[in-house]
Image (cartoon, rainbow, N blue to C red; front, side, top):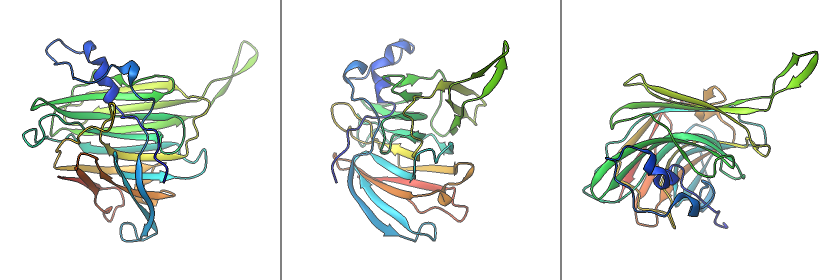
Length: 279
């Protein structure tokens, strides 16, 4: 299949690192202004059908930068996606400079917008670092760092929800608001949370919804950090179990640096799964 233009979700925050505390070391990557334009999966193969994960036909795919589950359907099919995950504890001794991102999102799979929020866990010269971020491409040309601290082992909850236009009476006139997306990230362990509502881009198709672990991108796909096993739970699309979503696709990552990230089958609830890193 033709490879898609990709962009690492969260990795542009590497170009924005200066807004963090001075104690945070800058990461040796290109500035945000030179980054590619959006997060997209780079597929190596698609189309193998398997019924073992959900009891229904499930497409199995291989990507160089995505691992997890994606649902795809016609435009305007997806209004919300949510999931919880445990912020990984990285093994930075195995690959001392490496990167990983964990997120939920609408769009980005096969269209020209993204509405995503999540966390990042990187190893920089053997030292682990964690970030939180969201992206609304093309409104924001790069990810926006979120001032919500997370630590390895903390339980993270994230959601993206579409808000349709609302018509109200104002000064004897009917006024219709723009559609928008509400992006929410919470650290369940600490009780801290962050939420933002951003105007929807007119071309937001809402044709896909994803729960993903990603290998970041900067002038090429970066080495995937050794996160061991990333556990996702309570994963839902349109308020229903992820496993019931239309056009569900299980995506295995084969990072060009040799790292593999393989999603497990969904459990009996169709909401919980894990992703396992292997060299």
